[in-house]
Image 1: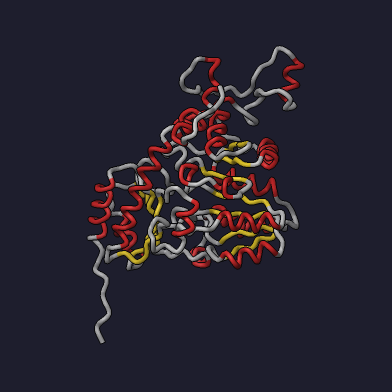
Image 2 (image 1 turned 180 degrees about the vertical axis):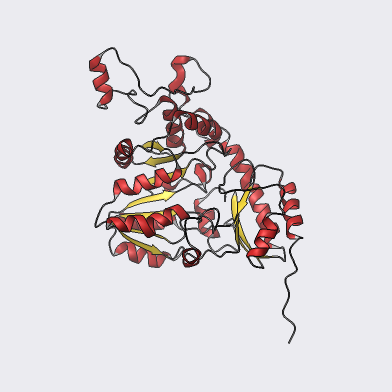
Length: 402
């Protein structure tokens, strides 16, 4: 059927589902078949060479996975989409497919820890030049881009410090030198932000997080310009980091409630950020929905909601972090985010566990930082839980009056 829905909530439910119309199923089924049979060899060859739509082998394409890819394609207003076994599979396959020796990447310091590891260790080993700029210093980044680059990689809001970059401005700078713009939209989700509409060429998602929403399946997604997506798809076909049918089914099912979950998480995160901002035991609160956030104006211009993740630091040391986190009751201390249940932890065990303490410090991530991914629980209960956990901390001594 022709897809006519204009609202994202409707799109998240219906997009891709008509592909299963021939079976009569109201929910796209899990197709676990490894291979797909053809009685006509000419038809088989036409599908195998891409002249006719169809499936040959599930490492390449699969009917269940296709439903998920179509959902993200339409939600992000993209020409094409493909999928991967994990979010890092989406990021690494994209970078390795589009880059090679002598190529140059300009990015920001505040990317997710796994991405940072690619930039700091893996890509340089292939003679790929990496320049990491101070996040938010748009002038410095524009200067680096203008000096020549092949790919600009952005993440906004960033993980875990929730910094914001101006996608339209930096995409324009990249395109002036013919560079490809890739944006990690995991934190924002397509409900809150659509980077392709702001000038990006490709968007990546860790579908494990908000898109799935239930912490029970892993996956990665890429969407954007057809020519670029197909190039990455061909690399992934041989690289083998394919998404399988069962996790694709779970992620697609989770996406049907994406708008409902994100709207609640947006509202709850803002209330919690305001509560923490006023609490005497809290040092800094990082959430772009606060009007005191340095990137608030940019976020308000390019986002329709500010997301379900915030981070904050305590006025204390790492022992206080441990005491506080282990006193929380309505939280899983776990290395993920975007779930229906609240998840929390410090970067040293979550987003940047792959890096050393020195590398985290180099990236401006303090050991006292706590990332807090808001679930769909009642926000009053979450605030009460935070309040009781903060009450166990020793009072911060104030300097004596001179």
